[in-house]
Length: 137
Image (cartoon, rainbow, N blue to C red):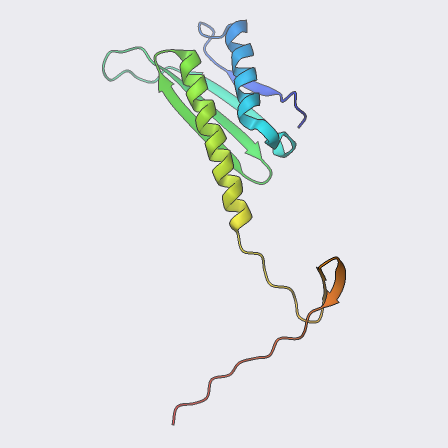
């Protein structure tokens, strides 16, 4: 996606205002930072969870579909702007963790005998030797 990331904002009609929509757009764009090229879809959902203490709270859930994974973050707060802000902060950390984990995945070893790229030129990898166990005496 481009820097003008399209965000699908889902919220109750009583909560959704133009000001909240602009705030969420700006905050999520900041959280995505340099990951815009990998973003497929962004969904932000606001809802009212069932109150357990009689306190009115708002849940903000942000789901980002990256290539090839999906990252979710959510937060619950009395103020819907603060809930969006905290969820965006969590999203930023979750994306960083997910991409760091992706970079740490082991790469399969090169196939013996096929050319591989190394030090700026094509080199040929030597064939692997097979180790065998000697039987116990």
